[in-house]
Image (cartoon, helix red, strand yellow):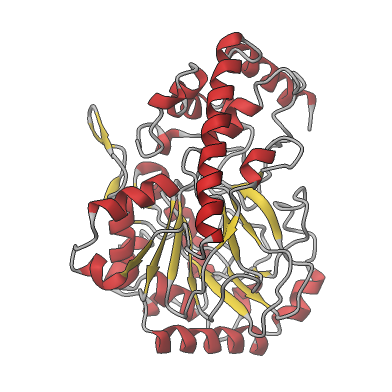
Length: 411
């Protein structure tokens, strides 16, 4: 990390009152709260109950999701929506994606471009088996499906979007954020991801918009912080780097293409929506160097580390068994990971589809992304591997529906 970034961290920490009595007391309170939350999570797991809220897509369609369930999602920062796509459709997409990868000799081409994507290089575990493709027909068709749009609307409406002059974002419409796909082999022991957050690392302490989002936390009054207030969320400025998301995502997420659950090398989360409070205040304690934020580095995922965030690790749980067509969604401040070992019998395959609602920040990125789509290049946020420029059966503009064109800023 260069000296300029270190100096910026020093200035920010001093301004935020690092080491002050107020910050120390706030941290003691949040640490106690996190311990109580992790105790609840462990109790549910011990009783063989999942602490992760679930919703059937039919309830989303019929607007019959209870307020209790919505509040559970807000509390946990995570949700499963079952059956967003028919199982047969998801399985067909899985087969088609496999053919697309094989017939275009992806593995041979990827070997020549190894090392271009460095986003996860500082995390403890090895790089996951994530494919740098964005424009296969299954990915494009899934992103523009009316059912996924309905799921996104439901999730987006969990946010308080009101600001003095209107809305921070439009919860009912979005711009597509083209992401990759994961296809993980059974028996793999090297392709996990250690616990982390995306969409900002050191910026969460130093960026003016992030400072406004977390103002109650830095004021030592974290009990007044609401992770679901959208104000300033679309104004943050992330450090530019391959795989650092330039869009504002209300939720990261993916759609299952194969059955997968605990021990299948799949998703883990810390389902505590205020877990970010613990991480923010932890970095402002006396035992952390003045130019350090518990290891946060520009252009890298924000890692949850055992030496700094031990209390949060007690809340790390694997998702329950998912079926093809089920989806998962997590708040941008929710810690998540991928299991280090795939001990199951089947591939654990997903398409990454999050929620990126309409706002000016997302529109500007969508325009750049549309150009990459038309040319078959990698999405702008990711390493310029550009595998698909000459791929056969790549999706084109003719594959887009009217909704798909609108989501891609092409109408």
